[in-house]
Amino acid sequence: MNWGVFEGLLSGVNKYSTAFGRIWLSLVFIFRVLVYLVTAERVWSDDHKDFDCNTRQPGCSNVCFDEFFPVSHVRLWALQLILVTCPSLLVVMHVAYREAREKKHQEIVGKDGGRLYLNPGKKRGGLWWTYVCSLVFKAGVDAAFLYVFHSFYPNYTLPPVVKCHAAPCPNTVDCFIAKPSEKNIFTLFMVITAIICILLNLVELTYLVGKRCRECLGARRAQNTYLRSHPDSVCKQDDLFSGDLIFLGCDTPPPLLPDCPRDNVKKTIL
Image (cartoon, rainbow, N blue to C red; front, side, top):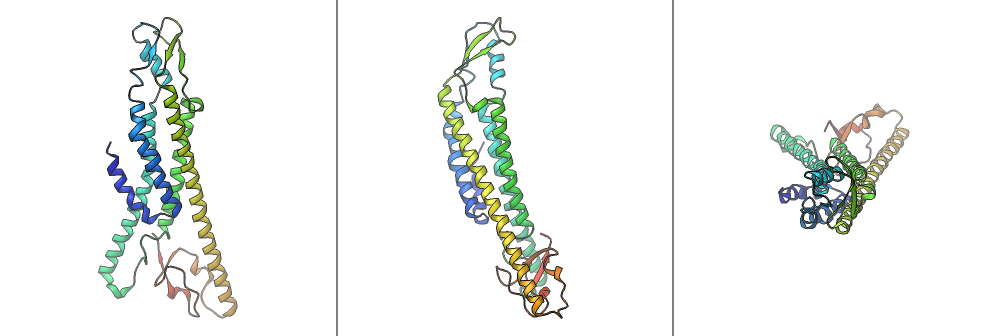
């Protein structure tokens, strides 16, 4: 598989990520993809050939190998890395959709007709939800694969010798795993990096949700202050909270003006 193409696609995610997201992406490529490509594939390349059982019974070694290695570590890690990085591509695709929509809007109304998005890459509205869902999905995928690994290989370790009594073996035979200590070291390394990635996703998720809650509380306090100072205002209280809002002309919500807040905001569904 050409992981270089994958890396090139995900490199654009950096400019749409928080600091925690950039750390996560660096960790994935340096300590997971790079280790997988450089060392893990070579360590597990001869696992079937060097799986030796003390019997001459034809087919016994193959059956015992399949019993103790139902799924290869390398293939599980490859599937895990693919699934855990795909949600980041959805964020890039959502930003590209916003940029195309903004360009089409500018062609229709002109430069003086206002903008749909002040910054298409800013995590507001639908893009915020896409980013949050991608964090939940990435953490869930890593957690699910950790559970699968633990189910197949208890304590994430391989014993040097396993006993097999599956047919067509004539009796209980001893089978020897090639380089078990080296494989255990790399397995534990990949497990630890996956746990760190889960923690980074949860920290970033907490940061984004906390930031959004603070913004909503600040906007609500500002609105309440405005309503107390202008009791005759005809603007309804739900105007600012009935949908995703994009403030035009600045990156942060402007203070409420004496006029109706609808003059300062534009609703959008994405």
